Structures are given as C-alpha cells and as structure tokens.
Length: 340
Image 1 (spheres, one colour):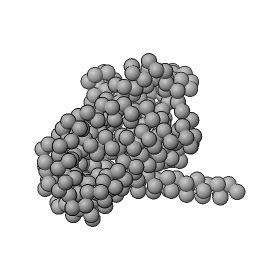
Image 2 (image 1 turned 45 degrees about the horizontal axis):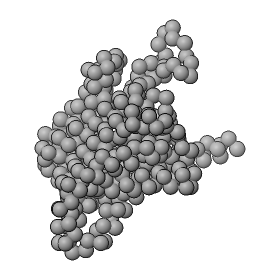
Image 3 (image 1 turned 180 degrees about the vertical axis):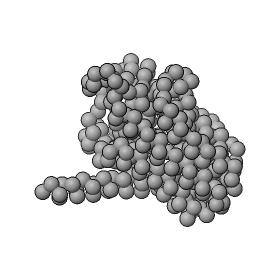
Image 4 (image 1 turned 180 degrees about the horizontal axis):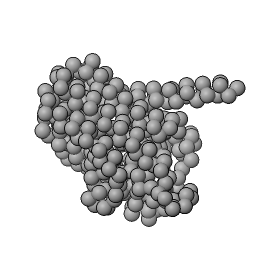
C-alpha cells in the first residue's frame, strides 16, 4: 500500500511538471510565432489580450466553476496594495513580450535567468538585507553565463536585450514589493490573476489602442488570412491562463527543490524547442553560456534551500517566524514569474 502511494506521488509530480512544461513552452513558442510568422508586431496588444483572457478565466474558475476559493481582499487594499503590484506585473509581462519580438527565445530565456541576481542586488541595495556568502558565490556563474551568452549571441538586438533585462528588474521589484504590499494575504496563482489581470487590462488598454491601433488596422487589411491569425492570437491568451492553472498544480504537487530544478530544465526545453522550430543561429559558446547560467540557477536554488533549513541559533521556531532571512528570497523561476 505504501509503495503504491509513493509510486502515485512520483507519477503525479512528473505529470504536474510535464503539463507545466507543455503550457509554458507552448505559450512562449506561440507568442514568438505571432511576432515572427504572423507578422503581428504589437506586443502591447498581445499582452492586453492575455490579460483579458486571464481575467475571464480566473473569474470562471473562482466564481462559476468554484474550483478555487476566493481570497477576499478589502476594497481599500485593492487600490492601496493590489493596484501598485498590478502596475509592476503589467510592466513585467509587456517587457517580456517586447523582448520576445526582437530577440530569439533562447536568448530571452537565458536573460530571464538573471532574475535571482537582480533580486539579491536590489534587496541588498534598497532594503540592506544580509545574504550568506554562498548566495553571492552562486550568482557568479549566472552573471558569467549571461555575459558569455550576450557577447556570443548571433542575433543580438540591443532594444530586445534591454527589454529582457529591465523585465528581470521588474520581476525582482514585483517579488520584493509582494513581501510588503501583500503581507497578510496568501495568494495562489489563480487568485493573483483574478485580482491583478483586470487592473493590468485597464492600465494597458489605452496605450495599446493609441500606440498600436492604427498598425493593427493596417495589419488586418493586408494580412492574407487575418481571421485565422486572430484565432491563434486569442488562443495564446487562453494558453496563458492555462499556464497559471498549471503553475498552481505543479507547486502543490512537487517540493521546492524539484520545482527549482524543473524550472531550470524548463528553460532548456524551451530553448531546444524554439531552435527546432525557428532555427535561429546558436554558436557553440552561446550554448555554453546558456548551460553555465542554468547550472548557476540550479546551484543558487539549492543553496537557498539549504540555508532555509538552518534556523539562526537561539531563535525560537514558530509558524509565524521565518527560519532566516533567506526565506524572504524567492526561488529561481518564482511562482509568479510565468503568469500571463
């Protein structure tokens, strides 16, 4: 009986990781396909469509199907806490789509792995938080791998590179703000989207119409099959919401260490699949830089996990007491990073 339960637990974890990989890689590849193959070069509109689909999906899951209980938030907190988070959330997603429009998936995914470094540096500079020397040491291969990948990238684009880099800063800022703004609320991925996606839609809809509206009208009039292309574009929004549901499932079916390793392997899978589809040129040194970065991210997550298991001497352990300062630092591929 015990052996069968163990086997089922392993099978459930593998299934959770597999469906997370499928949705994540599919969303990335679909977005790149929209920008490159459909020639729909409007990242603000793509992001807005994702937010709209995710808002509708979260409402259906929580209010209609009742698959997840709603975490109640006071109306005052929605504007004082949720809205500022939604602004950063919106910037993060838009920058990711902008970078995807200009640079290959492999390069974009590697740069996203820079997020642990930007999170540590921001917390150290702004909040003056202490970090164990092993955390700093684990950042060395991440930074070195990013530098090597950037220098040897054959399809380098400065605008796309800067968008991806500032996207890392936005992700880190979102994570740090969540510690203070969302204190007292334990959001899962579905409730996060339920509250933040409508705000993000409101923030982004006007800029999308003003900056990209005329271009979209021209695209509709010149594209050989605009309606089939529109189906693909809106399907990417549906897939983006499904990705949020898959994140919720994988978090509740795996351990923190497994989540960290699977997240870094997910990047490798995305890079491989994108290369097979788009055939963007990748040099040998570029691949080495990407591998070094992913190894560094895995090492970083492992060190953080080890430190989280070591309580400071003389500190009583209670459910409300963090085991140490490392607990405030997110794992690589933070649970909110992949949303819409």
